[in-house]
Picture 1: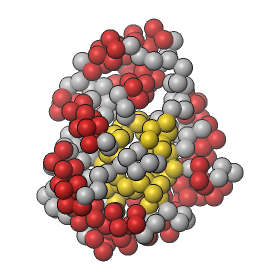
Picture 2: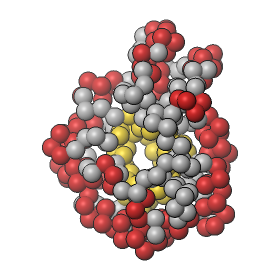
Picture 3: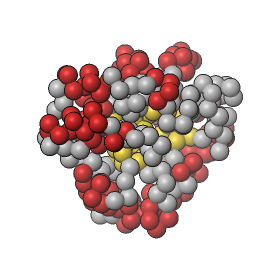
Length: 279
């Protein structure tokens, strides 16, 4: 497993495990399987309604807590400073942990215009020892600039939409410029897109004896992006880590970049300046 070093000195593996849609006993079993396969980033959120299942899997596994890197996220309903601090504490109680390894603001919600306040809460929660690394999700350059100017603290990570039909390369480059590690949510485009059936990806994959999913994961890693992949299937969990024995050529990466459809490629039209998420 390749390693990324964050601007706060903490380190993350090059591939994370997503948990959205995996709940209850099925979720616990999927998370235990993922940990046993070798994933160490477990990415959850209050909005996923599975923090309890993630915590239960961590309690059941023999893997030491310090080796498991748990991410959760602050919902739009808790951007007010005091509410954000309490929300982080409640999330920790639900999941049964003393601290989060990563905690992110899930969406900036600029129409609500409280994300600077929310960011200050994360900065202070880190000082309180509740969080190891603080970051954001779906933040655009103007949002990043504003929170950094207001607090003097740069996020360690920014989790963004990124897949071959929406490569979000300008935002990736801006994060790199600021020393922020980008993470990619839904790198396979969820079920709404046919990214894994893209013939150009299949052709590239065939050259390496791999699948289109391997190519997408590798494309992200070689661009300095940590993909957060999800599967309840043991077979696919294993397959998604089979990406460290090959490298894409510069020409392959250029071909993948050309698949970008701009704003038309977004999964659900969730533009960070427009999307309203308050749950």
